[in-house]
Structures are given as C-alpha cells and as structure tokens.
Image (cartoon, rainbow, N blue to C red; front, side, top):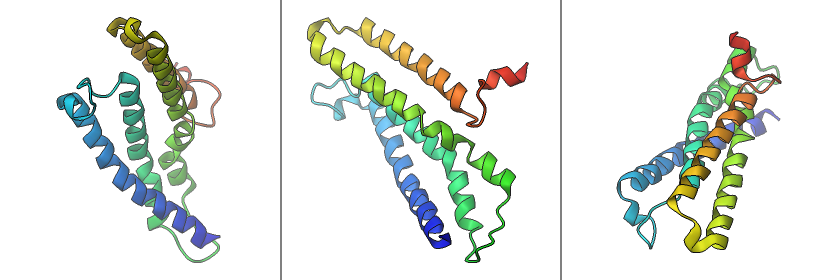
Length: 158
C-alpha cells in the first residue's frame, strides 16, 4: 500500500507541474491575445476562464501536500507523517472536490444559454452570469474551504 500511495502522490504532483504552466498560458492568452483562442476572435467565455482559473489556483494550493507526501515517504509500514502538516497542506483538497463542479455547472448553463438564446445572449447577460458564478464560487469555497467544518470560515472569526 505504501508504494501505491507514493506513486499516486508522485503522479498527481507531476500532473500539477504540467497543468499549472499550461493553464497560466491559457489565461494570459485569453487576457492579452484573445483572437488566438477562437475563430470569432472573442476569446474564451467568462465561465471557461473561471473554470481554468479555479483549476489552476487549486492545483497550486494542493502542491505542498503532494510535495510533503512524496518527500517524507518511507518504505516502512509505520510511516511517521506529521498530522498537522498533512492537515494544513491538504486543507484545500476537500474544497477542490466541490468547487470545480460549480464552475463546470456554470459553464454548462452558459453554453446552454448561448445555444438557446443566440442573438439575445448579450454582454449584459454574460456579465450577470459571471457575477452569479463568482458569488457561487465564493460561497462554496467558504463552506468547503476547511473541509471538516460545517460552518463557513467567517463564522470562526467572530
């Protein structure tokens, strides 16, 4: 089981090291060279850009957990990982299981609206969709950010 755990963490780390620069390249191209990313020259939609940004941010935030798991791995069955280090480096893992799904949901709704409304899907509607998506992402991140808590993060700051 220990080799399987090591292989999984190493593969995830390698995939994250490849994904982050590719996502950053897409984001920079969509901001500065939008005409390169689509046939119409309009670039990526707001919902697609939000999905890429969410994926990149969570990939970066989960890297410390993967690095810790790979560097402190031992072949013996009684591995001595620090529970505090595992918790605080892996705290975003639980949020990553939920937040990209919200971004994918808004991407699907955006595509459905674009197909069904065609010429009536204006920039104003796109802006409202983007604002609703940002609010939903913030709320879901707040409630799932620390994983084990059932109350939002701001509740504990009172």
